[in-house]
Structures are given as structure tokens and as C-alpha cells.
Image 1 (spheres, rainbow, N blue to C red):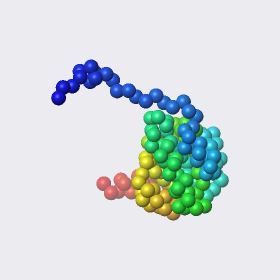
Image 2 (image 1 turned 135 degrees about the horizontal axis):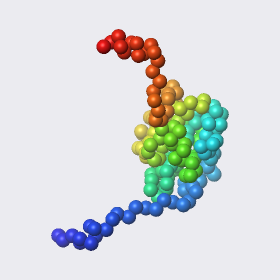
Image 3 (image 1 turned 30 degrees about the horizontal axis):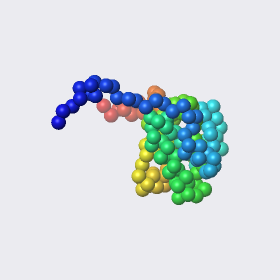
Image 4 (image 1 turned 90 degrees about the horizontal axis):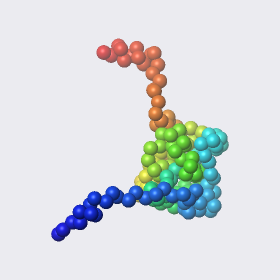
Length: 166
């Protein structure tokens, strides 16, 4: 078997980012299933509306095609958990800012919130059973701190206890 040296020397083609403001399945999620558009300026206000809320970050449709798969699965999850959560989608140009704010580092990601507070995230496209179990867990788990980059706050009492242990 011979290999073509010219083929090996060619760089891999990287898909160009989509210039579509929203891929078709995200548009369908908003148009047909009641999701709303939010961005870095409106996300906090939308989350303050209370209850269980899910924010969809799909990533660029060309570079991360599984984001469209998640957009297609989300209405089915809404049907499996009727009236348990509402959904928002973030336009591509705002996704990086929203992702940084809540510590999302992988595309696609579903961010879960309750009463304005971060709960958890599901990153990537998952098997149906994984989604069902993860969503059921997210709907009952307590809010937590978003996994953002920052310096953890340590109280004086915790430092004193650490010093006493050593």
C-alpha cells in the first residue's frame, strides 16, 4: 500500500465558523418550543424570573455540530419533564461571554439554574438515559457555585483549623 506524500503534507482543513446568527434547530427551539433569546446583558434578568431555567450554549454550528443535536433533543426533554423548566438560547455572538460568566468550557452545554442561582451543567451531546437522569438530578439538587475561574474565599476559622491539624 503506498501513501501519497502530497496528501500527508497538506494541512487539515478546519471548518470555517458559521456566519448564521442561529442555526436552524436553535431557531426552531425558539420559534416552536417557547425558548427565548438572552445574551450577556439580559441573562441575569431572565434568571431572576425564578424557577428552574436552562440556558443552551450550542457553539458554532460548523465547528460543533453536536450543538444542533442538543437543540433537537431539548424539546423532547421538555416533554419528558412537562412544566418543570423553561429554556433560553444564547446567540452565537454572546455565547463566549455567557460561558465565561458561568464557567462553561465545552460546546454544547446546558446550564441549569434555580431561582437565579447556578445549579449544574451538562456538557456535550449525551445518550438519552444520561440526559433523563442528569436532568432529574438537576431539578432537585441544591444550587452551587458556578465553576468560574477565581480565588476561593477561605475564612479565618478555616485557616486556623488547617493550622491546628498540622
